[in-house]
Length: 262
Ligand SMILES: [Fe+2]
Image 1: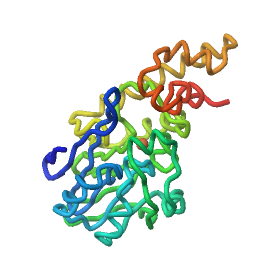
Image 2: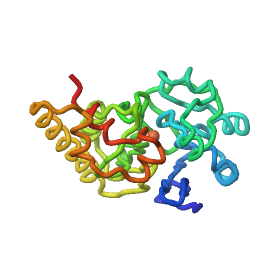
Image 3: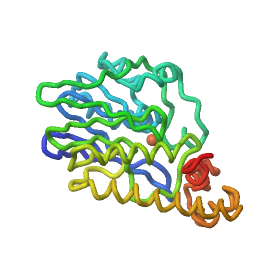
């Protein structure tokens, strides 16, 4: 684990996973606001850093276990408000029921009491607008500091090309969210898995163009009478370690199926 800083934004960085598949995790802290918590498997490493940062509030970008895994610890040990999209507040109060591989990767997310986001989070030096960006998950939000050109993007970006999606991803919604984001003023993104990227509008544009490309191909093959399974074999032929470890829970098929629904 490393702790670092970009301007006034502190962050920690670590990797989780197995020999053949590792995932980078970034957790950000700015002006009293902790953005996501990281996964429960990093409890012993991350909590001392959080103690040092001493947050006043925690903002969860979406209720995946690698983003909200330590929210219950924050609630108990720091007694601070934890904000989450209103649609997931009830689900958050219960322990996460996830597939075994996800639990091995990220640990066990316990239930916690979340509050629905207001439109903004105001701190001494910053105003963060809460931008709804569903797609990766229904409850996905980002934090936008427009005066500084900062976007805390959760899992909206991750990489310019995406070859896997979860069963609960909705790529057509993700496309709409990327289009919405590109209309905002920003320069730097703070991504939960790719880290800090400056001059980043072009990267977000690349991701959107990649999805446009996939969508065009899906439309073309569907007109030729192919089903989603056949199309995903053409567009995403490689089954990497992620596919095997997750037994297909993380798969190109979910991109093909949700990118242009009927
Ligand atoms: Fe996620």
